[in-house]
Image 1 (cartoon, helix red, strand yellow):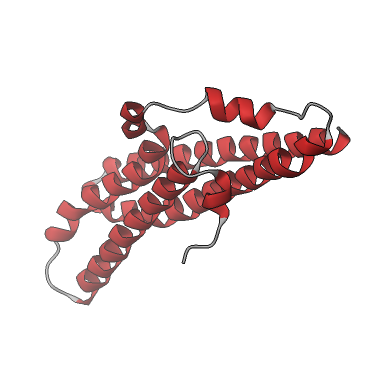
Image 2: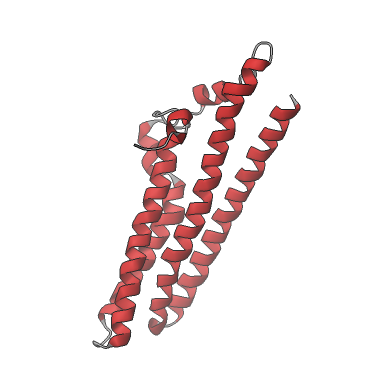
Length: 180
């Protein structure tokens, strides 16, 4: 039981870290959008957001997979050792599945890739107004990288939501198995 308590505490600490990452993402997004909107010449600063977004989303996803691993360990290794089993992870799987129609409304998509996409779209008019020069080529390269990072953060969030046991779909064991 002490191991179970320690593992549940680790899950709670990781979920707390996820909340912190979400707060940082929203703060950075708000600050950069405020800066960009304060002057039309500052719109290029929005291209920082896709980079910060993919880094924060990556950490958020890493915590999610760690929680899935711990939950799988509790269910498959610890629960059989306890008379009558622990049952917590099975109960979660049975009672926390989200109906398909609510998957689109996932706040992680809004908090991470949608903010990044808004930044990329918001920087576009500024970049389109730049005269052709070496500097504008650099800005367009940054915009292209930002668009690619936005897609990457979207795929990270999509993958972890797909693999989560909160959704109908693969079990955590399948989610943690290497892709082949």
